[in-house]
Image 1 (cartoon, rainbow, N blue to C red):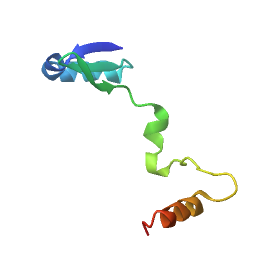
Image 2 (tube, rainbow, N blue to C red; image 1 turned 60 degrees about the horizontal axis):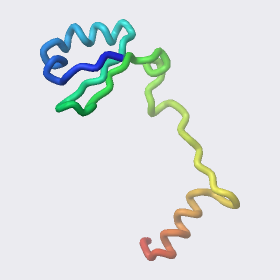
Image 3 (cartoon, one colour; image 1 turned 60 degrees about the vertical axis):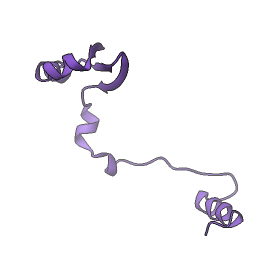
Image 4 (cartoon, one colour; image 1 turned 90 degrees about the horizontal axis):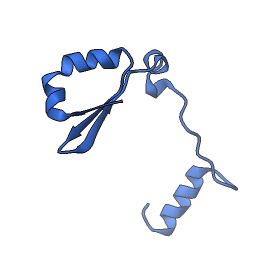
Length: 79
């Protein structure tokens, strides 16, 4: 991973993005603090948009998560 200051990224963005396209990752710093990590897109990300990929299934013991949330909200008088 290449670490570069923001001003250098701004001046050389095109060349740096060419390097990312070839497989390198960048960490951009502003005032010495990390503000962005730029990584190449993986083949899986290119083929299927995130909204079409299966999501995480959330489950609680003894019942459905949605039922537990509704019960919690009714106890807190949110609904």
